[in-house]
Image (tube, rainbow, N blue to C red; front, side):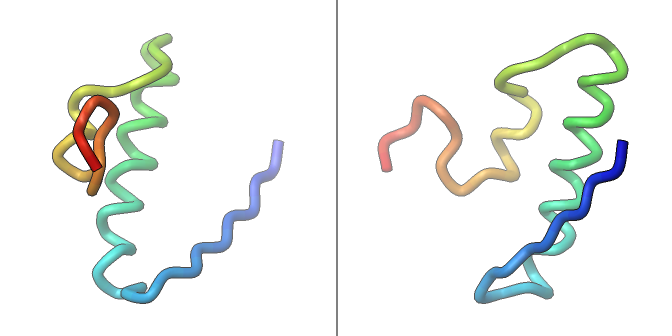
Length: 53
């Protein structure tokens, strides 16, 4: 499988580290057989699920 990802944001320098951390969390969850919402990712998200926008 090959995946190409392109990110366009207004603050690419500041967002890059957060996105890499989110990808690492997702990869770790997949390796351990977990899926869906990851509570440990909430601190990295601007509007985690369940929060008022």
